[in-house]
Image (cartoon, rainbow, N blue to C red):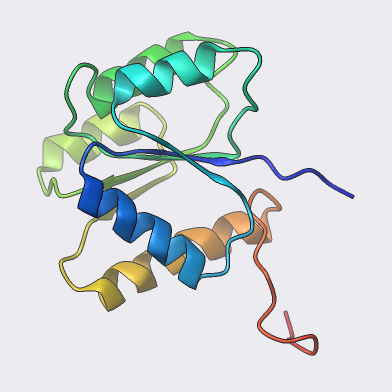
Length: 147
């Protein structure tokens, strides 16, 4: 039996973190969710050899202490961390934020929607992609569900 790596959610807003967790539950994601409130907490987690490496990082940009972009820079400079896939979840619509994060190698950029259904659809696309690649595992809706 394969042990699933967790998803690391780095989000300082309690409501947004709750929304992401609910969306992942609604999408039947089986991976554990580890929530860190800012980039500093996330970096501490990532540098701790006793903690499981995340399968995927869902990263907010605008956070106290260490911002999402600062965390990305630190991750890309670290050989142990640079391979971990990162998807940005943010309210930022600034083109420069998109350019900066893609230049730092993020694998996706989702603008948090006010409408839950729109956010769920966007998140589903990301989860589908990573589940097709074996990074994320989802429960099937029924025993007879087709791929």
